[in-house]
Image (cartoon, rainbow, N blue to C red):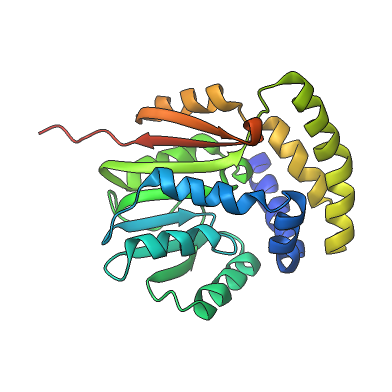
Length: 241
């Protein structure tokens, strides 16, 4: 319990320190690819007008904005994040782009303040890797989905080709920390934490099995950029009649 609390506190402190540079570094360090990964996630989620959607770990609200454009004025998107600094930037982005169907709220992915079966779809991008209790966060997603509701999780994963994996490891463990820290002037060590968190996160198949163990059906994943990231999807079981 204490270890989970310590991780949460440390991670939030690090993200607060680089919140102003988060979008810039995302684009620099992914060579702009994160935009296409996010669009693909929304394409797979296949939202409909009037859907109620939850974005967990919304950060600066990129995914929430993409979702809002798909559910139109009849739907709504709740963007949650545990980090107030990141969410504040997300709110400003939402306001500047006049997405009136997005509502931002501070919340922990492991204890979300919504009633059971509240959402038609739930998405999360680059968040699950940072939660203190991954299984509990997945249980919350399952709890909040309506029967037959769909989840999509975009996060870093394991490159599938060994030669490419070696090149990627050199980039993520050596170059990324240096470039990220230099751009953001960070002194908390977050750009060393990020590649370490990627290494510790379950690979594609292991994470798929974890999602299935929660009760999701039709769990699949789609690799992007050779497995640098993966998009996992699953559907909540239909309630028995």
